Length: 76
Ligand SMILES: [Zn+2]
Image 1: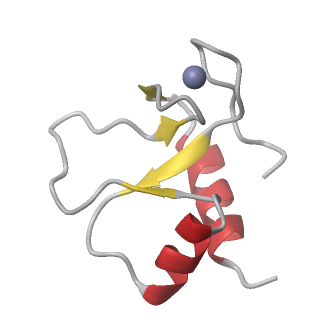
Image 2: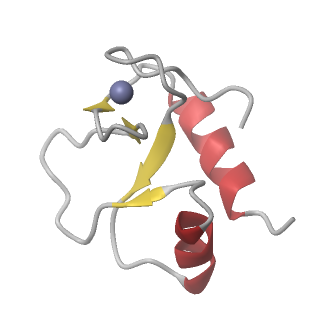
């Protein structure tokens, strides 16, 4: 999670947003605070990151997003 971007509003570390029906692994990662589940309705321009204060934003770097999600869904 070292590469997660900081919130542009408050500077808290970003947590990736997952859309869609969560798998059990995704629910466990969400319970651990590694991802945030936003449900099945995907907006036209979905935000990719959220923070502890529930700001949401998009980042340009999809590679970082994918890497952080992969790390979050990996079992420790
Ligand atoms: Zn924030």
